[in-house]
Length: 74
Image 1: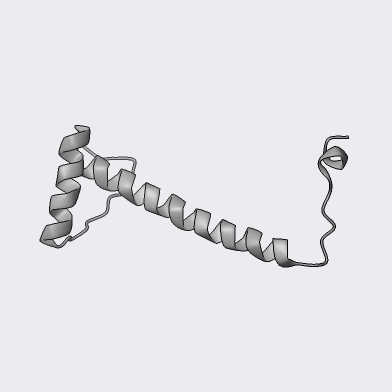
Image 2 (image 1 turned 90 degrees about the horizontal axis):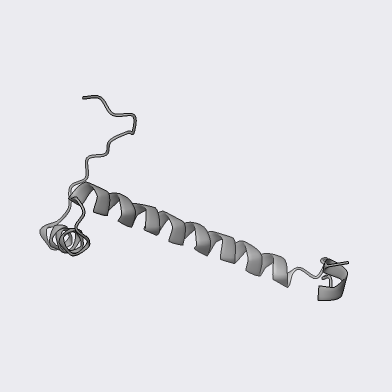
């Protein structure tokens, strides 16, 4: 049966496979769902690191005039 979602074939070393399998059993999910969730979480973390770096860069800029709390909500 065809699927709407793209598929990905991944080869894991035995130690990593055991970890994913253990997480899968603990959560009561399939290996595929566990791998998908782990990849999604890793992507979110990487995105957050990038956004944090961007925020840090903007905070260091002296060209920005910061608004006070009162100015923001008026």
